[in-house]
Length: 182
Image (cartoon, rainbow, N blue to C red; front, side, top):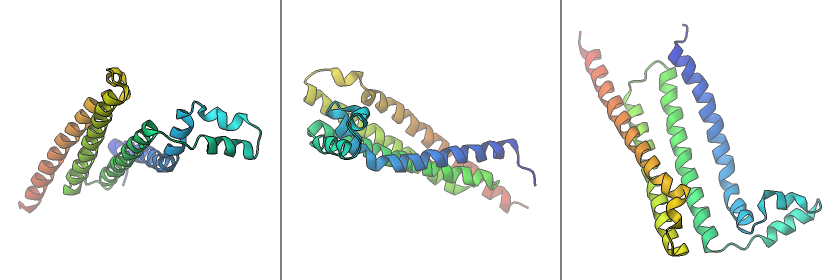
């Protein structure tokens, strides 16, 4: 049976989502190390600009001291990365049902609801980090960061996922009702 245009698009999207998911999981353990390096003002090039061999590792050990800001940033980024991994996984599951030719199934409604919860969690974490930044910087500086932008963006993403979840749930119910009708 030949694939429809939607199924071809879904297969391409599934490959892209899978690659993004794997990269996300690979990057999560490295986040605290990169925060330590970046906070010390060394940058990634600082690791490789010293002599090869132990030089880079000694520089990394020196950068190993992390302050309060570094801990908060690391926890925030790892938490958001974990939520993003869940969102990507739920997206893969929705794409699997599209590829199977049964997009209006009740599991899609649950998958989209889980993605919405993760979006709301990211928005809440960004709000907490923005409020924390007001105290840390003692200024309005945090209003002009990506954290302040994450709040409405992920709030809207969560609302969109909830609307899509409700649509998929209603479509699944209508489909089940039609399947029972002779």
